[in-house]
Image (cartoon, rainbow, N blue to C red; front, top):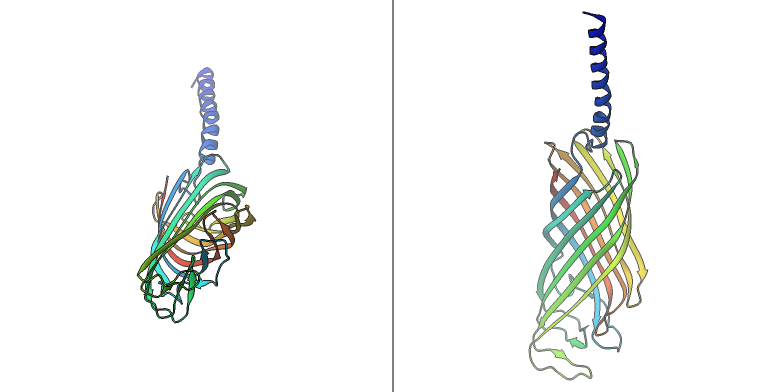
Length: 288
């Protein structure tokens, strides 16, 4: 081989090597997490078996709130229920992403309480047959930033907002009193709700245990005074996901959500109370 031809081959190899460097860097930048699992888009659908504890007082006048009603113990509303949870994320930068989640439960029950209780401006007498429906919805959207990422462990923070809606409906038979002890004299349906959007801050960590197994631990919440609302929402969870292909994974975890309402005033109704839900999740996750 001539010297000039050798130099041409050496030059060609050098050009190819130089071209391969940025290409490999680009692949490294786009490397998945964990391993080769892509993380540009993630979508997770879970079934949630939840247990609940709900204590609230509602009033539709300015005369003050009555005692807290435990919907599970006093009114027989289901204390456990299975529903679904939807979560997703979109990576918009090397360290940043947009996340969202949504879950909701619809529960019901019937009972003739053995105690008088107040609901809105009405007093329901002991022994009155009551059918109750209670629905809850929580939606969250946040910006996430990975403050630390070594390819195996990520430590991150989130900032966003959560919106919750709790709606209660009671259908009571004869045995309901108006203020002053005046009987309503007929069956009545009473409905009210508490809904509020609140800012939330969070922290979390992800650990790529192997090239196809990922764990995630997180907490987010905030307690604040917004004038007509004083309280907050918090949520925490832990999950593990095994990706049996690059784009699909299955997993399980636990999750807890708490809503604390110290004061709520919508102008036409007031409320205070708490809502707690803890659940076991089984999920399917898609990665792109």
